[in-house]
Length: 500
Ligand SMILES: Cc1cc2nc3c(=O)[nH]c(=O)nc-3n(C[C@H](O)[C@H](O)[C@H](O)COP(=O)(O)OP(=O)(O)OC[C@H]3O[C@@H](n4cnc5c(N)ncnc54)[C@H](O)[C@@H]3O)c2cc1C
Image (cartoon, rainbow, N blue to C red; front, side, top):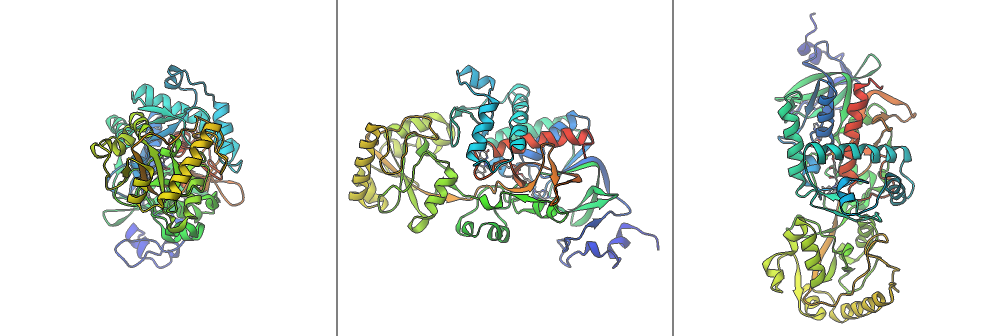
Protein backbone atom coordinates (compact mmCIF):
# COMPACT_ATOMS: atom_id res chain seq x y z
CA UNK A 1 0.00 0.00 0.00
CA UNK A 2 1.29 3.37 -0.96
CA UNK A 3 1.70 5.39 2.20
CA UNK A 4 0.05 8.71 1.76
CA UNK A 5 -0.79 11.00 4.62
CA UNK A 6 -4.43 9.98 4.31
CA UNK A 7 -3.53 6.29 4.60
CA UNK A 8 -1.17 7.07 7.41
CA UNK A 9 -3.97 8.63 9.41
CA UNK A 10 -6.37 5.85 8.60
CA UNK A 11 -3.87 3.17 9.47
CA UNK A 12 -4.82 1.64 12.79
CA UNK A 13 -1.16 0.80 13.43
CA UNK A 14 -0.54 4.47 14.02
CA UNK A 15 -1.67 4.15 17.58
CA UNK A 16 0.39 7.07 18.74
CA UNK A 17 -1.81 9.35 16.70
CA UNK A 18 -5.26 8.45 17.84
CA UNK A 19 -7.53 11.29 16.83
CA UNK A 20 -10.82 11.91 18.51
CA UNK A 21 -13.89 11.31 16.38
CA UNK A 22 -14.93 14.96 16.59
CA UNK A 23 -14.30 17.38 13.78
CA UNK A 24 -11.76 19.08 16.04
CA UNK A 25 -9.32 16.31 15.08
CA UNK A 26 -7.71 16.39 18.47
CA UNK A 27 -5.28 13.56 19.18
CA UNK A 28 -6.26 11.93 22.45
CA UNK A 29 -3.03 10.33 23.64
CA UNK A 30 0.19 11.61 25.17
CA UNK A 31 2.36 8.99 23.44
CA UNK A 32 5.06 10.32 21.09
CA UNK A 33 3.58 11.48 17.82
CA UNK A 34 5.43 9.99 14.90
CA UNK A 35 6.48 11.88 11.82
CA UNK A 36 4.33 11.62 8.71
CA UNK A 37 5.77 10.27 5.51
CA UNK A 38 4.85 13.48 3.80
CA UNK A 39 5.21 16.80 5.56
CA UNK A 40 2.89 19.60 4.47
CA UNK A 41 5.48 22.32 4.91
CA UNK A 42 9.07 22.65 6.06
CA UNK A 43 10.88 25.40 7.98
CA UNK A 44 13.98 25.85 10.14
CA UNK A 45 11.94 27.04 13.11
CA UNK A 46 8.29 26.53 13.97
CA UNK A 47 6.94 29.04 16.49
CA UNK A 48 3.75 28.08 18.28
CA UNK A 49 1.84 31.16 19.46
CA UNK A 50 1.80 34.77 18.26
CA UNK A 51 1.91 36.61 21.60
CA UNK A 52 4.84 38.71 22.78
CA UNK A 53 7.21 35.75 22.92
CA UNK A 54 6.30 34.31 19.53
CA UNK A 55 6.46 37.70 17.82
CA UNK A 56 9.84 38.59 19.28
CA UNK A 57 11.17 35.15 18.31
CA UNK A 58 9.86 35.69 14.76
CA UNK A 59 11.67 39.04 14.59
CA UNK A 60 15.02 37.62 15.70
CA UNK A 61 14.54 34.49 13.54
CA UNK A 62 14.30 36.59 10.40
CA UNK A 63 17.19 38.80 11.50
CA UNK A 64 19.29 35.66 11.93
CA UNK A 65 18.33 34.26 8.55
CA UNK A 66 16.16 31.44 9.86
CA UNK A 67 13.24 30.31 7.76
CA UNK A 68 10.46 30.45 10.35
CA UNK A 69 6.69 30.17 10.58
CA UNK A 70 4.25 31.21 13.31
CA UNK A 71 1.21 29.04 14.09
CA UNK A 72 -1.51 30.88 16.02
CA UNK A 73 -4.71 29.24 17.15
CA UNK A 74 -6.81 32.41 17.28
CA UNK A 75 -7.61 34.77 14.40
CA UNK A 76 -5.23 37.47 15.62
CA UNK A 77 -1.84 38.11 17.21
CA UNK A 78 -1.28 39.33 20.75
CA UNK A 79 -2.43 36.80 23.35
CA UNK A 80 -2.20 38.09 26.90
CA UNK A 81 0.66 40.31 25.78
CA UNK A 82 -1.74 42.63 23.96
CA UNK A 83 -4.02 42.88 27.00
CA UNK A 84 -1.49 43.26 29.76
CA UNK A 85 -0.60 46.24 31.94
CA UNK A 86 2.23 47.06 29.56
CA UNK A 87 5.11 47.17 32.05
CA UNK A 88 8.49 45.90 30.89
CA UNK A 89 11.20 45.94 33.52
CA UNK A 90 14.66 46.70 32.20
CA UNK A 91 17.73 48.06 34.01
CA UNK A 92 20.14 50.75 32.99
CA UNK A 93 18.22 52.07 29.99
CA UNK A 94 18.56 55.38 28.22
CA UNK A 95 15.15 56.60 29.46
CA UNK A 96 16.19 55.74 33.03
CA UNK A 97 19.49 57.59 32.61
CA UNK A 98 17.68 60.63 31.21
CA UNK A 99 15.57 60.74 34.35
CA UNK A 100 18.65 60.35 36.56
CA UNK A 101 17.56 56.89 37.75
CA UNK A 102 20.54 54.81 38.83
CA UNK A 103 20.01 51.12 38.17
CA UNK A 104 22.12 48.14 37.18
CA UNK A 105 21.80 44.57 35.96
CA UNK A 106 23.22 43.39 39.29
CA UNK A 107 20.54 45.23 41.28
CA UNK A 108 17.81 43.95 38.95
CA UNK A 109 19.03 40.35 39.34
CA UNK A 110 19.32 40.68 43.12
CA UNK A 111 15.80 42.12 43.42
CA UNK A 112 14.24 39.47 41.15
CA UNK A 113 15.82 36.77 43.30
CA UNK A 114 14.62 38.51 46.47
CA UNK A 115 11.05 38.83 45.17
CA UNK A 116 11.19 35.19 44.03
CA UNK A 117 12.38 34.22 47.52
CA UNK A 118 15.41 32.62 45.88
CA UNK A 119 13.21 29.89 44.47
CA UNK A 120 13.99 31.16 40.96
CA UNK A 121 17.00 29.95 38.98
CA UNK A 122 19.78 32.61 39.12
CA UNK A 123 21.12 31.53 35.71
CA UNK A 124 17.70 32.14 34.13
CA UNK A 125 17.30 35.46 35.89
CA UNK A 126 20.71 36.61 34.69
CA UNK A 127 19.98 35.47 31.13
CA UNK A 128 16.66 37.32 31.24
CA UNK A 129 18.13 40.57 32.58
CA UNK A 130 20.83 40.64 29.89
CA UNK A 131 18.54 39.60 27.04
CA UNK A 132 15.71 42.01 27.87
CA UNK A 133 18.08 44.96 27.52
CA UNK A 134 18.95 43.84 23.98
CA UNK A 135 15.24 43.52 23.23
CA UNK A 136 14.64 46.95 24.73
CA UNK A 137 17.28 48.39 22.39
CA UNK A 138 15.21 47.02 19.51
CA UNK A 139 11.91 48.32 20.91
CA UNK A 140 13.24 51.73 21.88
CA UNK A 141 15.95 52.20 19.27
CA UNK A 142 14.76 50.43 16.13
CA UNK A 143 10.99 50.60 16.59
CA UNK A 144 11.19 54.01 18.24
CA UNK A 145 8.62 52.99 20.87
CA UNK A 146 9.02 55.27 23.90
CA UNK A 147 7.65 54.30 27.31
CA UNK A 148 4.91 56.54 28.76
CA UNK A 149 6.66 56.54 32.09
CA UNK A 150 8.99 54.50 34.30
CA UNK A 151 7.61 53.32 37.61
CA UNK A 152 8.83 51.62 40.76
CA UNK A 153 6.27 48.90 41.28
CA UNK A 154 6.20 45.72 43.30
CA UNK A 155 9.60 44.42 44.25
CA UNK A 156 11.82 47.18 42.85
CA UNK A 157 13.79 49.75 44.80
CA UNK A 158 14.16 52.10 41.81
CA UNK A 159 11.81 52.96 38.93
CA UNK A 160 12.45 50.17 36.41
CA UNK A 161 9.04 49.23 34.97
CA UNK A 162 8.90 50.93 31.54
CA UNK A 163 5.21 51.40 30.86
CA UNK A 164 3.82 50.89 27.34
CA UNK A 165 0.10 51.54 27.42
CA UNK A 166 -1.86 50.26 25.65
CA UNK A 167 0.46 47.29 25.07
CA UNK A 168 -1.59 46.29 22.00
CA UNK A 169 0.05 49.25 20.23
CA UNK A 170 3.52 47.92 20.94
CA UNK A 171 2.48 44.41 19.91
CA UNK A 172 1.03 45.80 16.67
CA UNK A 173 4.29 47.64 16.01
CA UNK A 174 6.35 44.49 16.45
CA UNK A 175 3.94 42.49 14.28
CA UNK A 176 4.00 45.14 11.54
CA UNK A 177 7.78 45.22 11.62
CA UNK A 178 7.98 41.45 11.18
CA UNK A 179 5.22 41.37 8.53
CA UNK A 180 6.77 44.21 6.52
CA UNK A 181 9.90 42.15 5.99
CA UNK A 182 7.72 39.35 4.59
CA UNK A 183 10.02 36.56 5.64
CA UNK A 184 7.88 34.90 8.31
CA UNK A 185 4.41 33.63 7.40
CA UNK A 186 1.71 33.68 10.08
CA UNK A 187 -0.95 30.95 9.99
CA UNK A 188 -4.03 31.97 11.97
CA UNK A 189 -6.70 29.62 13.33
CA UNK A 190 -4.00 27.01 13.15
CA UNK A 191 -3.71 25.42 16.60
CA UNK A 192 -0.74 23.16 17.32
CA UNK A 193 -1.98 19.83 18.65
CA UNK A 194 1.12 17.71 19.21
CA UNK A 195 4.88 17.82 18.87
CA UNK A 196 6.44 15.27 16.57
CA UNK A 197 9.43 13.07 17.44
CA UNK A 198 11.75 11.84 14.71
CA UNK A 199 15.39 10.74 14.66
CA UNK A 200 15.91 11.40 18.35
CA UNK A 201 14.53 14.92 18.47
CA UNK A 202 11.47 17.09 18.24
CA UNK A 203 11.29 17.61 14.52
CA UNK A 204 7.96 19.26 13.87
CA UNK A 205 4.40 19.98 14.84
CA UNK A 206 1.07 18.40 14.10
CA UNK A 207 -1.35 21.30 13.84
CA UNK A 208 -4.84 21.76 12.49
CA UNK A 209 -5.44 23.93 9.44
CA UNK A 210 -8.78 24.39 7.74
CA UNK A 211 -10.12 21.58 9.89
CA UNK A 212 -7.48 19.12 8.68
CA UNK A 213 -4.25 17.73 10.13
CA UNK A 214 -1.31 19.90 9.11
CA UNK A 215 2.24 18.59 9.47
CA UNK A 216 4.95 21.23 9.74
CA UNK A 217 8.59 20.18 9.82
CA UNK A 218 11.09 22.09 11.93
CA UNK A 219 14.62 21.34 10.76
CA UNK A 220 16.28 23.26 13.58
CA UNK A 221 13.78 23.73 16.38
CA UNK A 222 10.25 24.15 17.66
CA UNK A 223 9.50 27.04 19.99
CA UNK A 224 6.55 26.79 22.37
CA UNK A 225 5.25 30.32 23.00
CA UNK A 226 1.69 29.44 23.93
CA UNK A 227 1.28 31.52 27.10
CA UNK A 228 -0.35 30.45 30.35
CA UNK A 229 -3.24 28.20 31.37
CA UNK A 230 -5.53 30.34 33.51
CA UNK A 231 -8.48 29.41 31.30
CA UNK A 232 -7.89 25.68 31.74
CA UNK A 233 -9.99 24.85 34.78
CA UNK A 234 -8.68 21.35 35.32
CA UNK A 235 -5.02 22.45 35.19
CA UNK A 236 -5.78 25.31 37.60
CA UNK A 237 -7.57 22.98 39.98
CA UNK A 238 -4.67 20.52 39.77
CA UNK A 239 -1.95 23.05 40.54
CA UNK A 240 -3.74 25.51 42.84
CA UNK A 241 -7.30 24.70 43.97
CA UNK A 242 -7.54 28.14 45.65
CA UNK A 243 -7.53 29.70 42.19
CA UNK A 244 -10.72 27.85 41.26
CA UNK A 245 -12.76 30.68 42.79
CA UNK A 246 -10.76 33.43 41.09
CA UNK A 247 -11.90 34.82 37.73
CA UNK A 248 -9.27 34.49 34.99
CA UNK A 249 -8.23 37.36 32.74
CA UNK A 250 -5.96 37.67 29.73
CA UNK A 251 -5.74 36.06 26.31
CA UNK A 252 -8.41 33.43 25.67
CA UNK A 253 -5.77 31.19 24.11
CA UNK A 254 -4.23 30.66 27.56
CA UNK A 255 -5.38 27.08 27.96
CA UNK A 256 -2.08 25.32 28.64
CA UNK A 257 -1.72 23.60 25.23
CA UNK A 258 2.04 24.07 25.05
CA UNK A 259 2.59 22.97 28.61
CA UNK A 260 0.76 19.69 27.97
CA UNK A 261 2.47 19.10 24.61
CA UNK A 262 5.88 19.49 26.25
CA UNK A 263 4.92 17.31 29.21
CA UNK A 264 4.04 14.54 26.75
CA UNK A 265 7.79 14.39 25.99
CA UNK A 266 8.89 14.43 29.62
CA UNK A 267 9.33 18.17 30.20
CA UNK A 268 9.85 19.07 33.83
CA UNK A 269 7.63 21.80 35.29
CA UNK A 270 8.53 24.43 37.85
CA UNK A 271 6.83 26.95 40.14
CA UNK A 272 3.32 25.52 39.77
CA UNK A 273 2.87 25.81 43.54
CA UNK A 274 3.32 29.59 43.30
CA UNK A 275 0.39 30.43 41.01
CA UNK A 276 -1.16 33.56 42.37
CA UNK A 277 -3.80 36.04 41.45
CA UNK A 278 -3.17 39.77 41.06
CA UNK A 279 -4.82 42.22 43.41
CA UNK A 280 -6.62 45.36 42.31
CA UNK A 281 -9.20 44.34 39.72
CA UNK A 282 -12.78 45.53 39.54
CA UNK A 283 -15.36 42.91 40.39
CA UNK A 284 -17.75 44.59 37.97
CA UNK A 285 -17.33 45.87 34.46
CA UNK A 286 -14.12 47.87 34.37
CA UNK A 287 -11.35 45.76 32.86
CA UNK A 288 -8.38 47.66 34.24
CA UNK A 289 -6.59 47.09 37.49
CA UNK A 290 -5.64 49.89 39.82
CA UNK A 291 -2.60 49.89 42.08
CA UNK A 292 -3.44 52.95 44.16
CA UNK A 293 -1.87 51.15 47.14
CA UNK A 294 1.58 51.79 45.62
CA UNK A 295 0.72 55.49 45.44
CA UNK A 296 -0.60 55.95 48.98
CA UNK A 297 -3.91 54.15 49.40
CA UNK A 298 -4.68 51.62 52.09
CA UNK A 299 -6.63 48.40 51.56
CA UNK A 300 -9.61 47.63 53.79
CA UNK A 301 -12.28 44.95 54.09
CA UNK A 302 -16.04 45.36 54.51
CA UNK A 303 -15.53 45.94 58.25
CA UNK A 304 -13.38 48.97 57.42
CA UNK A 305 -10.21 47.29 58.71
CA UNK A 306 -6.81 46.98 57.15
CA UNK A 307 -5.42 43.44 56.99
CA UNK A 308 -2.01 43.70 55.28
CA UNK A 309 1.13 45.78 54.65
CA UNK A 310 0.05 47.35 51.34
CA UNK A 311 3.62 47.83 50.08
CA UNK A 312 4.20 44.12 49.35
CA UNK A 313 3.82 42.42 45.94
CA UNK A 314 0.29 42.53 44.53
CA UNK A 315 0.48 38.76 44.30
CA UNK A 316 0.88 38.50 48.06
CA UNK A 317 -1.82 41.14 48.48
CA UNK A 318 -4.10 38.76 46.56
CA UNK A 319 -3.44 35.94 49.00
CA UNK A 320 -4.32 38.28 51.85
CA UNK A 321 -7.48 39.52 50.09
CA UNK A 322 -8.61 35.96 49.34
CA UNK A 323 -8.63 35.36 53.08
CA UNK A 324 -11.11 38.21 53.73
CA UNK A 325 -14.84 37.60 54.09
CA UNK A 326 -16.34 37.51 50.61
CA UNK A 327 -12.81 37.83 49.08
CA UNK A 328 -13.91 41.39 48.45
CA UNK A 329 -11.97 44.46 49.55
CA UNK A 330 -11.48 48.14 48.77
CA UNK A 331 -8.65 50.54 48.03
CA UNK A 332 -9.17 53.76 49.97
CA UNK A 333 -7.44 56.91 48.74
CA UNK A 334 -7.93 60.65 48.70
CA UNK A 335 -8.02 63.41 46.09
CA UNK A 336 -4.25 63.95 46.03
CA UNK A 337 -3.61 60.28 45.20
CA UNK A 338 -6.38 60.38 42.55
CA UNK A 339 -4.64 63.33 40.88
CA UNK A 340 -1.15 61.86 41.12
CA UNK A 341 -2.26 58.54 39.64
CA UNK A 342 -4.18 60.24 36.84
CA UNK A 343 -1.09 62.21 35.92
CA UNK A 344 1.19 59.20 36.16
CA UNK A 345 -0.18 56.97 33.43
CA UNK A 346 -2.86 56.93 30.75
CA UNK A 347 -4.27 53.66 32.00
CA UNK A 348 -4.89 55.13 35.45
CA UNK A 349 -6.26 58.34 33.95
CA UNK A 350 -8.83 56.25 32.06
CA UNK A 351 -10.17 55.10 35.43
CA UNK A 352 -9.62 58.14 37.65
CA UNK A 353 -9.46 61.24 35.50
CA UNK A 354 -13.15 61.12 34.60
CA UNK A 355 -15.69 63.91 35.01
CA UNK A 356 -17.80 62.19 37.69
CA UNK A 357 -14.90 61.53 40.05
CA UNK A 358 -13.43 64.98 39.42
CA UNK A 359 -16.82 66.43 40.43
CA UNK A 360 -16.90 64.27 43.56
CA UNK A 361 -19.56 61.90 42.21
CA UNK A 362 -19.64 58.07 42.13
CA UNK A 363 -18.97 56.04 39.01
CA UNK A 364 -20.21 52.47 38.47
CA UNK A 365 -16.78 51.29 39.64
CA UNK A 366 -15.73 53.76 42.34
CA UNK A 367 -17.46 55.34 45.35
CA UNK A 368 -16.79 58.93 46.30
CA UNK A 369 -17.54 61.00 49.46
CA UNK A 370 -16.58 64.30 51.05
CA UNK A 371 -15.91 62.51 54.35
CA UNK A 372 -14.61 59.05 55.21
CA UNK A 373 -17.98 58.19 56.78
CA UNK A 374 -19.91 59.29 53.69
CA UNK A 375 -17.88 57.19 51.24
CA UNK A 376 -17.97 54.24 53.65
CA UNK A 377 -21.78 54.31 53.86
CA UNK A 378 -22.09 54.40 50.07
CA UNK A 379 -19.81 51.38 49.66
CA UNK A 380 -21.41 49.36 52.46
CA UNK A 381 -18.28 49.55 54.63
CA UNK A 382 -18.54 50.09 58.42
CA UNK A 383 -18.20 53.94 58.68
CA UNK A 384 -17.08 54.16 62.34
CA UNK A 385 -14.48 51.46 61.93
CA UNK A 386 -13.16 52.95 58.70
CA UNK A 387 -12.85 56.38 60.33
CA UNK A 388 -10.90 54.80 63.22
CA UNK A 389 -8.67 52.91 60.77
CA UNK A 390 -7.81 56.11 58.88
CA UNK A 391 -7.15 58.06 62.10
CA UNK A 392 -4.78 55.35 63.28
CA UNK A 393 -3.04 55.11 59.90
CA UNK A 394 -2.58 58.88 59.58
CA UNK A 395 -1.05 59.05 63.03
CA UNK A 396 1.32 56.17 62.11
CA UNK A 397 2.30 57.98 58.88
CA UNK A 398 3.36 60.97 60.98
CA UNK A 399 5.58 58.68 63.04
CA UNK A 400 6.90 56.98 59.87
CA UNK A 401 5.95 53.44 60.84
CA UNK A 402 2.70 51.54 60.58
CA UNK A 403 1.98 50.13 64.05
CA UNK A 404 -0.42 47.49 62.70
CA UNK A 405 1.39 45.78 59.81
CA UNK A 406 4.84 47.35 59.69
CA UNK A 407 4.39 49.23 56.43
CA UNK A 408 7.15 51.81 56.04
CA UNK A 409 7.00 52.80 52.34
CA UNK A 410 4.72 52.97 49.33
CA UNK A 411 6.24 49.91 47.64
CA UNK A 412 9.12 47.63 48.64
CA UNK A 413 11.06 50.35 50.48
CA UNK A 414 10.39 53.00 47.81
CA UNK A 415 8.41 56.21 48.47
CA UNK A 416 7.04 57.70 51.67
CA UNK A 417 3.65 56.74 53.07
CA UNK A 418 1.00 59.45 52.72
CA UNK A 419 -1.79 60.56 55.02
CA UNK A 420 -5.30 60.06 53.75
CA UNK A 421 -6.56 63.56 54.50
CA UNK A 422 -7.58 65.44 51.32
CA UNK A 423 -11.28 65.19 50.36
CA UNK A 424 -13.01 63.84 48.44
CA UNK A 425 -12.26 60.27 49.48
CA UNK A 426 -12.59 57.25 47.20
CA UNK A 427 -13.35 53.58 47.82
CA UNK A 428 -12.45 51.44 44.83
CA UNK A 429 -13.92 47.90 45.17
CA UNK A 430 -11.14 45.47 44.31
CA UNK A 431 -10.77 41.74 43.87
CA UNK A 432 -7.93 39.44 42.84
CA UNK A 433 -8.00 38.02 39.31
CA UNK A 434 -5.73 35.40 37.81
CA UNK A 435 -4.14 37.19 34.88
CA UNK A 436 -1.19 34.88 34.33
CA UNK A 437 0.14 31.57 35.60
CA UNK A 438 3.88 32.46 35.77
CA UNK A 439 4.97 28.82 35.92
CA UNK A 440 5.54 25.97 33.53
CA UNK A 441 8.15 24.02 31.65
CA UNK A 442 11.69 24.07 32.90
CA UNK A 443 14.10 25.79 30.52
CA UNK A 444 17.79 26.61 30.60
CA UNK A 445 19.40 29.97 29.77
CA UNK A 446 19.38 28.94 26.09
CA UNK A 447 15.56 28.58 26.23
CA UNK A 448 15.89 24.80 25.75
CA UNK A 449 13.17 22.73 27.41
CA UNK A 450 14.58 20.47 30.12
CA UNK A 451 13.16 17.04 30.86
CA UNK A 452 12.47 15.38 34.21
CA UNK A 453 15.96 13.85 34.20
CA UNK A 454 17.64 17.22 33.71
CA UNK A 455 18.55 16.90 30.03
CA UNK A 456 17.44 19.21 27.22
CA UNK A 457 14.75 17.72 24.98
CA UNK A 458 16.53 17.96 21.62
CA UNK A 459 14.90 20.43 19.25
CA UNK A 460 12.44 21.84 21.79
CA UNK A 461 12.51 25.42 23.11
CA UNK A 462 10.07 27.53 25.13
CA UNK A 463 9.63 31.15 26.07
CA UNK A 464 7.26 33.37 28.00
CA UNK A 465 4.46 32.46 30.27
CA UNK A 466 4.58 28.75 29.46
CA UNK A 467 7.96 28.58 31.24
CA UNK A 468 8.88 28.20 34.91
CA UNK A 469 12.01 29.08 36.88
CA UNK A 470 12.33 32.78 36.10
CA UNK A 471 10.01 34.14 38.78
CA UNK A 472 10.23 31.58 41.60
CA UNK A 473 7.87 32.23 44.50
CA UNK A 474 6.61 35.61 43.24
CA UNK A 475 6.98 37.87 40.26
CA UNK A 476 8.37 41.34 39.90
CA UNK A 477 6.17 43.61 37.78
CA UNK A 478 7.33 43.83 34.19
CA UNK A 479 9.27 40.57 34.15
CA UNK A 480 6.51 38.38 32.65
CA UNK A 481 5.86 40.48 29.54
CA UNK A 482 9.63 40.90 29.61
CA UNK A 483 10.52 37.21 29.81
CA UNK A 484 8.31 36.45 26.80
CA UNK A 485 10.44 38.88 24.78
CA UNK A 486 13.81 37.99 26.29
CA UNK A 487 13.50 34.22 25.93
CA UNK A 488 11.82 34.54 22.52
CA UNK A 489 15.04 36.26 21.44
CA UNK A 490 17.25 33.65 23.14
CA UNK A 491 15.35 30.78 21.52
CA UNK A 492 15.86 32.22 18.01
CA UNK A 493 19.52 32.88 18.79
CA UNK A 494 20.18 29.33 19.97
CA UNK A 495 18.12 27.66 17.27
CA UNK A 496 20.19 29.58 14.73
CA UNK A 497 23.32 28.13 16.35
CA UNK A 498 21.88 24.61 16.25
CA UNK A 499 22.30 24.57 20.02
CA UNK A 500 20.45 21.36 20.81
C1 LIG B 1 -4.37 41.92 32.45
C2 LIG B 1 -2.92 41.52 32.45
C3 LIG B 1 -1.96 42.42 32.91
C4 LIG B 1 -0.62 42.03 32.90
N1 LIG B 1 0.33 42.98 33.19
C5 LIG B 1 1.63 42.68 33.04
C6 LIG B 1 2.62 43.69 33.12
O1 LIG B 1 2.32 44.88 33.21
N2 LIG B 1 3.92 43.31 33.04
C7 LIG B 1 4.29 42.00 32.91
O2 LIG B 1 5.48 41.71 32.92
N3 LIG B 1 3.36 41.04 32.72
C8 LIG B 1 2.06 41.34 32.77
N4 LIG B 1 1.11 40.37 32.53
C9 LIG B 1 1.58 39.03 32.15
C10 LIG B 1 2.14 39.04 30.73
O3 LIG B 1 1.32 39.86 29.90
C11 LIG B 1 2.21 37.65 30.12
O4 LIG B 1 2.85 36.75 31.00
C12 LIG B 1 3.01 37.66 28.81
O5 LIG B 1 2.62 38.73 27.99
C13 LIG B 1 2.80 36.33 28.09
O6 LIG B 1 3.40 36.39 26.82
P1 LIG B 1 3.49 35.05 25.96
O7 LIG B 1 3.98 35.44 24.63
O8 LIG B 1 4.19 34.01 26.72
O9 LIG B 1 1.95 34.56 25.86
P2 LIG B 1 0.72 35.26 25.16
O10 LIG B 1 0.95 36.69 24.92
O11 LIG B 1 -0.49 34.87 25.93
O12 LIG B 1 0.69 34.57 23.72
C14 LIG B 1 0.44 33.21 23.58
C15 LIG B 1 -0.18 32.97 22.21
O13 LIG B 1 -0.19 31.57 21.93
C16 LIG B 1 -1.44 31.23 21.34
N5 LIG B 1 -1.66 29.79 21.52
C17 LIG B 1 -1.99 29.12 22.64
N6 LIG B 1 -2.10 27.81 22.40
C18 LIG B 1 -1.82 27.63 21.09
C19 LIG B 1 -1.77 26.50 20.23
N7 LIG B 1 -2.06 25.28 20.67
N8 LIG B 1 -1.44 26.68 18.94
C20 LIG B 1 -1.18 27.92 18.44
N9 LIG B 1 -1.23 29.03 19.21
C21 LIG B 1 -1.53 28.89 20.51
C22 LIG B 1 -2.42 32.12 22.05
O14 LIG B 1 -3.63 32.25 21.36
C23 LIG B 1 -1.63 33.43 22.14
O15 LIG B 1 -1.83 34.22 20.99
C24 LIG B 1 -0.24 40.72 32.49
C25 LIG B 1 -1.20 39.84 32.02
C26 LIG B 1 -2.53 40.23 31.96
C27 LIG B 1 -3.55 39.29 31.39
